[in-house]
Length: 588
Image (cartoon, rainbow, N blue to C red; front, top):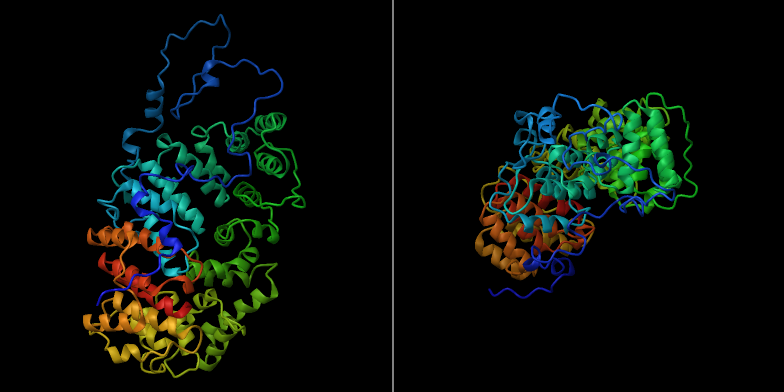
C-alpha cells in the first residue's frame, strides 16, 4: 500500500528539525526570564556620586573564591605571609576529590527511577538542546509527562557538542515549564557552583524560587550577575546569614538606586527581616498586583504569605503545579490544585492520597475537600464492596466529565476491589491504569463488557500479552460509550500496531480501513526513527514530547501515537508505551 500524504500540522512544521541546531530562535541561547519586568536588566547606576571601591570589590574574580580584602590603611605593612591566589582558595574550599564532573549530571539513578546514564549516548547535543527548548508544556499525556520528568532528572552523561552545565540548564528549564519544580532544583544542584554558566545561573534562580527556597540562592550569588534579582538576592542572603542589619542596609541602598519597588522590594524586605536580628515587620498586600511572577511566588512562599487565587490566572499552569508540591504551602491551599497536578503527572497516586489524608487533620480545609478525604478513607476501609464502590463514585463526583485527577486518586482503592461485573468497569480500569497498576487491571478482563473501553485498555496494557490480537477482535472495538468513537477506534488501532500486537498484514489492512497514515514520513519521523535505531532513549522521549504539542488527546493524530509508542518500545520503554496507549483510550 502506498501511504497517502498527510496534511502538515503546524506543531510539526514549526519544528523545522532540519535547521534546529543551526538556527536557534533569537534569545534562546538562554531561557526566558520568569522574573518581573526589568529584573533581567543590570541595576541602574545610583543617582548620587558613587563611593570609590577597591578594584577587587568592584570587579570580583570569576571564581567562587572570596575577593581579597583591601589593606586596613594606605600605610599598613604588608603581611609577611603570602596571600593564596584564587585557584588555591577554591581548591581549599572544594578539594579535587569532592568536585563533580560535568560529564555526568543529575540526581536520579536507575535505582531511583531514572534512565540509564547513556540515555543520550551518541546524540547530537545541540539538536537535543534545541528540541528541549521547543517542548511546550503541559503535555496531554500524564504518562509521557512522567517519562519526560524521569528522563530529564536522570543522572545523565552529557551528549557531545554541549557544555554539561548548559545541558543541565536546558533540562531544568523544561522541568520548570512542566511544573516539576523539585526535580528542576535537583538537576541544577547537581552542578558545582564553580562550574555554573550564565544560563545555568539564571535557571537556578528560577528553580529556587519555584520551590520557595530563598536560601538556595545564597551559594549562587557569587555566580550571579548585576541583574536586579541578584542584587536583591545578595541583600537577602546577607540577612539570612545572620547579618540582618547589613542586609537591611543593602535593601535600603537597592531602593534608593531604584533596583526594585512595590511588592517585589517588599517581599525581599520581608525575607531580609527573617534574619537573625531582623527587626522590621513587613505587611504584604496584593491589591495593586496584576501579574504573578516566579519572584513574587517564590518569596511569598518562602515567607508564608498566601498568594490570592485570582493571581494564578495571570501565570502559566506550571505555577499551580509548583504550588501543589510546595512544602511551605498549607495542605488546605495545595488541595485545590492537586487533582490537576496529578492528572499531569506532577503528583503520584501515593502523594495525592497522602495529601488528602493530611487534609483530615488540617485546620482550614474546605468542607468539599474534607468530604472527599472522608470518602477516600471509606473507599479503602469499608467492610463491603458495595460500600467501597459507592465511596469511590463519591470521590469521582457526579459531573458529566470526571476529572482525570480523581481517577488517579482512587487507583489503589479500585485495585483493592473484588472482581465483579460493574457498570463502572471502564472507569475502574482507567483508574487503576492511571497509576500503572496494569496487572490489577488485567484481572478484570473476564468481567468487563466485550469490546468496550475497559476491554480495549486491558488489551493495550497487558504486560503478559504474547499472541497478536486478531483483526476481527481489533475491529470489533466500538469506541466505548462516550466521546468520538471513530477517533478512539483509530487510537486503539494505532496503539496495538505500535506495540506490535497485530500481525503485519492486519496492520496494513487496518491502516487503510481506519485511515491511519502510519507510513507518512517527515522531518520528525525521520529523526525519531534514527534515534530509535541508535537506541537513544533520551532523544526518543524528547521527540515523543515534541510530537504531542497539543493541549488535549483530541489533538494527537493516531499516526503520531503509533510512531511514539513504536519508538518507545524499540528503545526498551515498552511499559511506558503500554500506559500511554491505554491512556489515549481513557482520555480521548
